Image 1 (tube, rainbow, N blue to C red):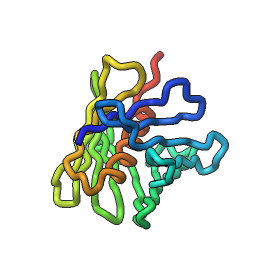
Image 2: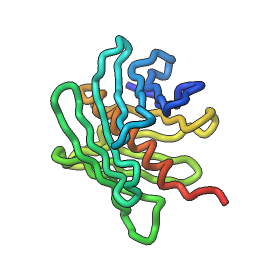
Image 3: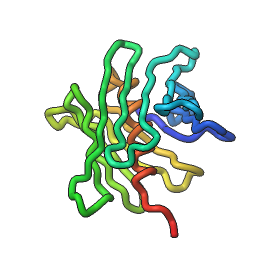
Image 4: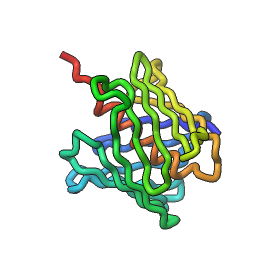
Length: 167
């Protein structure tokens, strides 16, 4: 299954859409602009909440997030850099599942979501020709599509926040 993650057009509150490459919207994420910690709710096409994730507005070191899926599964994420002197490759650890999201930032950014054993559950790459911060995500484990979509939204935000500011 292929997904596309993009900013919702004319969004005021950091809304994201997760759709198929054919344009069918599967999930929409809404961030409450005044929440502390920053809270994002993910709803499916019927408007049912499928996940919620939170992050501190001031956490620049770890970019920690807490995810709660409707299924009752909780995940805690924390970002670290593969090499402390370089910020173009990072690893986001997902606990208690033992998964990891490996990010790479270059001309186009990419990431992979892997199981504890190293099996790739999803691959994503930034699409530079499209407006905004758009990623195509190849989901290799359809049973975990909600978790993969939420992890992909967070990975997208972490890559964007870790990018150096233009001078």
